[in-house]
Image (cartoon, rainbow, N blue to C red; front, side):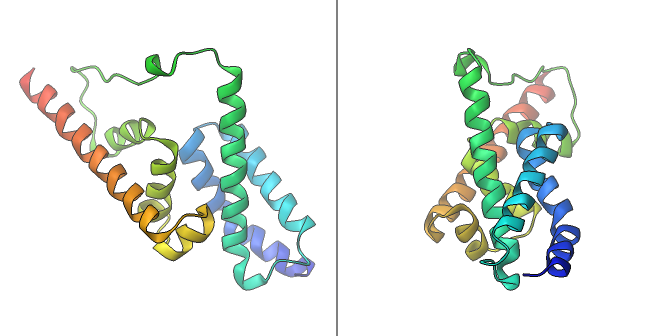
Length: 164
């Protein structure tokens, strides 16, 4: 990969990486740092990266950096995980997009990542397999569970709101 191909990759995939990362951590400063670190890795490995596989390489690196970031944050917090679940007040009416974002925050990280890659970013199962280093059946199971949990959460909250 030469300088022009690198610059093209930054322009083409930068906003996609930012969206992918920010959906997970909702911290734009950290998102920008992780994105920049991802492109630094691409630059350092440019001789080994095939331009046709740059998208997969970038998302794999970003995913790994995202996991490391979340581990670091988790290690610095002294919060009991049972108390971190967001409870949604019954009297608040969310529109569908806001509700889904709230419910997505309650998903296990891996389910959330698979859901984002598939339903928001539009990647196919094979691409998600390669990015996340999972088998196709694992991708399908995580996606199914994430969608099911979102559906159940939405139904429960919709029932609570309608009963008030």
